[in-house]
Every structure is written in C-alpha cells, then in structure tokens.
Image (cartoon, rainbow over all chains, first blue to last red):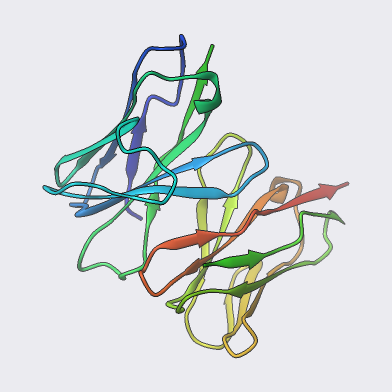
Length: 117
Length: 109
C-alpha cells in the first residue's frame, strides 16, 4: 500500500511557541491531504482539507490563523500550530489521497503527539 | 450533519468472535471504512464497503446494509494483538470521512 510519512512522531513545546508538522506521501502524488485531530478516547475530527497549490479548506470551528496549512507540492503538506497552548495538546494525523486511486481511499501518516507545557 | 454510533467498549476471550456494530445517519453515502487503531498510533485500514453485503478478508469480515444505515465488523479467532480501538468511518456526499468515536476491544486470555 501507499506510504504516508508524518514527522515528528511526538513533540513537546512551550506555551506560546509554534510547532510545524510535516506530512509526506512517499510513493504517490497526493493532490489532497487531510488533517485530523484526536483527543484521548475520542474520534478523529477533520480539521482541514489541503489541496496542492491552493488554500486549505477549514472545518467549522477550526481557526485558520492558528492552524496554518501549506500544501506547496504534490508530496508535502505542513500544519503549523501557532502560539500553541496546553489545550492544543492532542494527536494530529494526516492522510493523503490522489486521483487515479479509489476516490475515497485515504492513507494515514503515523500521527504526531503534541504536548504543550 | 453526520451521526455515527458504535459501542464504546467490548471484551472477549482469545479465540472467540466479536461483532462491532455501527449505525450511521449521514448526508449522502459513498462508502464505509473500518480501521484499527492501537493506542498512540494512526489508524490502519481494515475494510471498505460501498455495496450491500458481506466482505470477508481473513479473520475479519465487514457487512453493510445501506437501507438500514448499518454495518458491522466481525473479528474471528481473536488474538491478543487484536486488542485495539476499531473505528467506523463513513464517506459522505462531500467525499470526506466522518469517524465514529471508536470501539475499544479488549481480548482476554
């Protein structure tokens, strides 16, 4: 199956700082990438849909100025959590899909555990 | 909006069978996924159903009834490594995935 690599796997940062998470599709070109957030014992919640070369589409309630998404190439999307606060501590997961594959097929990265102290 | 329900927890004995039910009410339907997720890890794909019926893949099977808004994941010959969270996810009319809260399955010896 396709491989999506997410980095870093975990990060601890101080409150007020920014953290960048990378999501790479290693063996296919991902025109669309999705960013999810998962709090303990809860479901994955879609934060935003990122399309290569265009602005991300954010879900209701997600602050676009706080969660900056860049999808500059067909193999890389980044999520930057700006001015992080303890309540942003969560598990962030990306997934990627591309045309030519089953339209609904999505491959997940390993996830990033963010802890803001 | 999307509403996806599945039980919170289930416990079963090694070697047994467990069935995880999922009911959904969504805006449009373009398929249903089941994923397995171990603690602290990303979900891994188990199955995909878009037509009614049973899909069998080794020890795991998944069933779908679109008219009833219902699916189940059947895990046979349970092994300790099957202890995980199982996520039901529906693809809506916008082709986005909406996840259920997950069912934590605990396999006991």
